[in-house]
Picture (cartoon, rainbow, N blue to C red):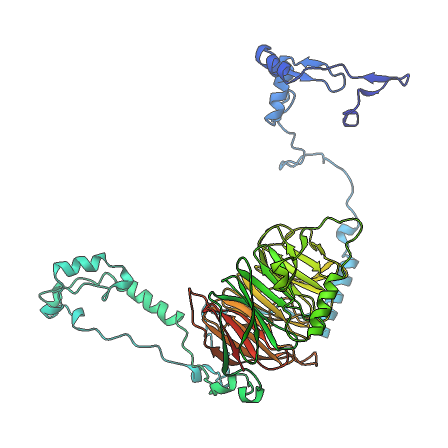
Length: 606
């Protein structure tokens, strides 16, 4: 019947015609009403073969009940009828079966004889051993009986006798001196204390004579605790090794052997009136640009400390970046919602002219493509001050950084959408958003110094993207709560990240996605980190007002790990409003370090 559950028929008759099921169109409501109104509902069953409701008779109901109880179906069947005992104890005249006895019943068995002879042979040859009598092992035994007493760790050499119980004092006497007897207040205080906090685990009492002293109620309890102490307390002599603590510290080279590195403060560049947020050095190393909260971008000569030019901008300067190409004289400045491309006009006049010609040579395309930003040419006073192009964004900017070839630059916007990071091409005045969706709040971005890689630092991770293949190459786990800054080694295989929880993480990109070394030398949040382009140096600036310079040697031998040694702590900046050093940058050719502080100064350490 199961095979026909989903079909309208239940089989075929002799003529091969389908036998259709009767139409049953009762729904749940009809069934419920029938259950309520029909008194014989409980004895009605459905016949699966015909589909008809059959009402059971009293005899059938009685049969079902008997079968459910495990009784016999037939009412008249008696399971306890008297049995006929054929083989009874009485000897009868006639046997029940008159079969003659077998011959084998009175002849010895040949099979058994063979078995016995085999067993006898096996016992003679020693193949079968007779059962040994059981040895009664005692229920308790010496645990260390099997131990070799001559061994170094033998029990008797390592045996330390159990500590003796302290001898009883005056307070445990049956007749203690009166000063040992507690007052009522002391008794109350003792009862309110927790058992581990009590000075004594009993109250001293006085009795007239020894006969009056009752049995000690805590005797069994204390004896049990003493046994616990004896067998749970490990008593063992420890072999002490005499090691010179100096041998455990790894051998690091002396800082004198790692020179040159910045050691003294040589120049202070004064002129800003607000905290100096950012700075950048020209590729020639002759000029320095700085941006501040006072709404000014200043251009300095590095060796003399003179401010050669001040460019007033409307707002806080968040980031400045000098173009790394030696054939261009161009500075990108991130202010409020715009990136200004400035030609400062310093140094070689031919360079400045060539830069202007390159920017003016732009021919707009015939059909405009939609862009996430708008490019504007500067005019009037702005142009006379050196501003050539304005790249207007929709949200405030955080950072701007150049690609090493000097044509592309990237900007980071204060936003949570996929338009946080934008890549721009200055010669074609074209911008694009490289990411479709946001992966978190972006803190900083960097171009790889040699390969087409792009580093994007969010609060917890640093993602490395391949710009040619347009895919995620690596995701670095910083183990920091909030990444603040990062810098790439000029070789391109190492990366450092500074974080607001005062940690600096060094990543070896070939080694692992986790930090190779985490340095915790600063006392406050790290604001900026930087690598030197040629020397094995890197620096970190922090809110504690100090800059720590470290020697970070990366070897060409891939099997040798980088050598990281802190060599100098540079101090000079005063902390203002809980802020210290806001940016650090190395000179491109000399082992010099520039630091920008919240005390409105820039300092040069040489």
